[in-house]
Length: 402
Ligand code: FEO
Image (cartoon, rainbow, N blue to C red; front, side):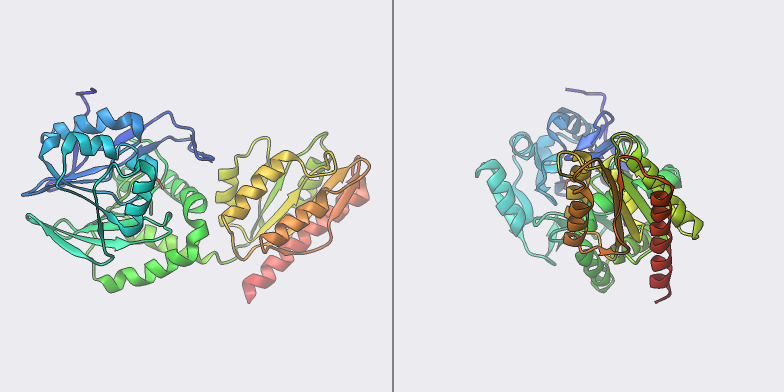
């Protein structure tokens, strides 16, 4: 037991009792280069309530933090807002230590938690919009299906005006600073954007629906207490407006050039494409796959209107790093993108054909013809690449005017 771990007060009678994971660098394929936190919250009152738990090996740390406020056995209720294991992995163990009167979750949460734990939990499913008076505290539960799992829900604590939003509005950032105003803006915005791109982008239509519905619920929100990263208290409107912008995915005057290379030929082509884009006045980001993680590429793509993709042909196919990245990006369902393809080859040259097929599957509008170079691109081929970049920029600018 790490008995030095104490709860941190975030509001009257409300405490952060989570854990900081300084060392995690991969969360199911997401490069968590700044680590993360698993935020759990304790509401102390006539009835004591625990909102969410932590990832497996942080159980002792959570219990230690709870114990600094009250004995864990004094917890009356647990709310599970999200059944993914970084928040619910220790739920059975916690229920064993706490013996709660009830564990609340959404209907889909009950289904998911039962499947995870094979009936070891006695769960009480709540309805979306249901309000419950628990001692001197009032909780309202709001289902947020597919933000980002079917079970996801928010819990609103009326007396403290806190919206517990599980994964939504979060970010992977290990920090001892609990609040948004204690983190530099450039870190906050990049990590929030990267998190949106990798976790919430596939559900953008549902994000827009939620953002339209939230004001109608008349929730007076002074804090958004997320399950990862800092709590929003000074920039609530800012994060809500960023979510609207990211969810709308309006095309922006920026292109990403994603490529890998065997002997430098496709790299030369990528540089020429990027030159064409920037010479025509659009922003461009070059992302060589030997140096760019798929989850950072997803974040760059979110704010880009175009993706140019290049690959050598290897064994009659695309380079394996391209396959990895494009499968991942396809799953995130980016919208409103234009694209272009290029690649080098020695004798068969299938890479551009397969790249085009993947972009079409992603519903990316392909502009220009694929540019191919046999072995090493000559001046004429590099000029074609630059012209392709120019076409990308011109098409983006036309779209922005419409
Ligand atoms: Fe942080 Fe979807 O779990």
